[in-house]
Length: 182
Length: 114
Image (cartoon, rainbow over all chains, first blue to last red; front, side, top):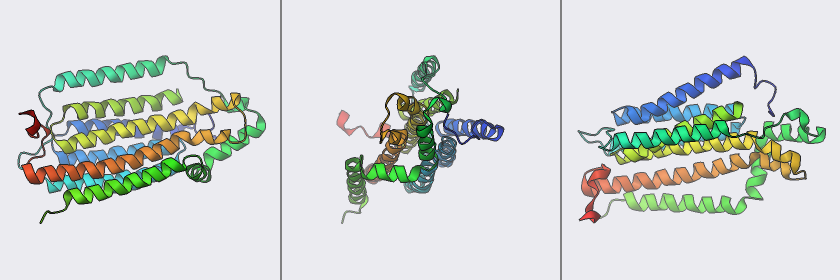
């Protein structure tokens, strides 16, 4: 599609398969490993793999956000909470409805995959664009941060502000919840 | 093929997260599986906006229409922000419950049942 010409090369192909297979296997490890602390380490690996997928999709800014927020902040919070609430018999166990739930999840996955593969996606080649638009599109995709910031502060400014207020409220609420009562 | 495989990875991540959310006893494990589901959605949104929006651009031409190329990335930014807020609040609630009940298992938090 609107790639920079390297999207079909062999190195990108190989890195796609390595990243996707390691992402899926570490995601399976997150729900299968008994020790919760090790599972959280595999969760970090999954976040790193998703950041790699973002880079392959041409969303470098999102990959940076993913590294900073998920790998940097959320996983540290999760590990902190695991260590705060450590018990002797703590483990990543499932309850008795495990078989039924795995059937539901597997069915959902098969349904989604069959829908994805049977849909006739309307994808077109970059050569069929009018010439002036092609340059603009390729420029937007390759140099996305100016457009992203423009969109965040014009078209989506209300959502942007609301998300800021939501984050502030969530942090204040978290502080109020975990504060020691005197 | 290139769009489909990203969508399939997103669907697989979402399904693994769905299994974890529905089957885990430990509340932090449920939160971790929820993060897996968020990541699957994010991959799907970015892949869709990258590969399907250019088709719309051929039928809708105009000044600002190129910006729609990045709509999926904007949505993903908001999803990540809301996920961060949700994890902060969720872990605070888990720690508060742990202080009063000395347990983090979801199966032990059933006071309202009786």
